[in-house]
Structures are given as C-alpha cells and as structure tokens.
Length: 60
Image (cartoon, rainbow, N blue to C red; front, side, top):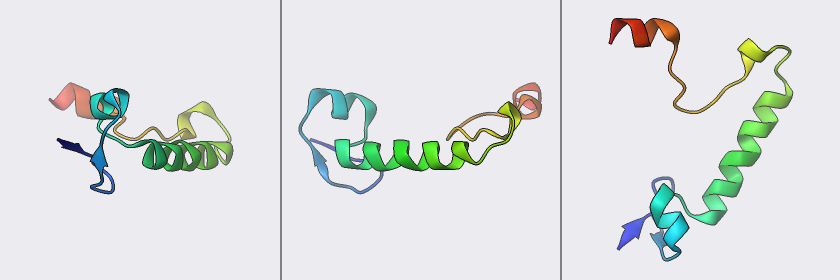
C-alpha cells in the first residue's frame, strides 16, 4: 500500500498512488500555490514547489 507524502493517509486511487499525494492534499496544495502566485507581481516571483534555481543546477 502507498501513503500520501503530505498527510500519511493510505492511497487507493491509481492516479494518487502514481503522484504520491491524495486528492484532498493535492487540492490544498494547488490552492496554496495559486494563492501565493496571485500575489506575484512578475514571473520571477512565481513559486513552484521543488523548483530548482539556475545556480543550484550549475553547481550540481
């Protein structure tokens, strides 16, 4: 059995298992991303979870 990476609940849906996040947590995550991005004044201010900075890529 697979579990949600955010809340630990057991996942049953194949799509949820594939991405590792349940539908409720996914909805909350998407809502939070949209809320933060609505405040962004320019493209550079957009926040994407797990997004790598160019400097991090060049160092790695």
